[in-house]
Length: 102
Image (cartoon, rainbow, N blue to C red; front, side, top):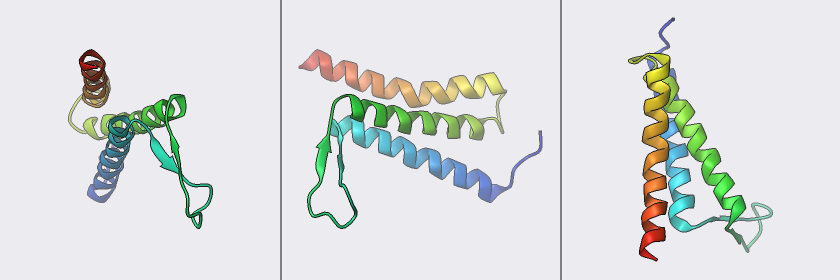
């Protein structure tokens, strides 16, 4: 496979890091705020199933970006497993720990 340029590699890694951060913000905050327009003065807190889907969307985007980035160094299967493990295991442990403490 052809190697991609360094700026493309950095851009995909940045996308993955920002997606991971966004997923963690939703998980840690228990939801997210959404406004109907950018000029609205009020925002609605979204929790529950929509927040879970938003966090999963962010984590899947991060896993995809990191799997692509790791393919530079690992085989396709190893990079996919490593990316999914690094992205999905910590939030699952965080949620399980918070459920056991409560």
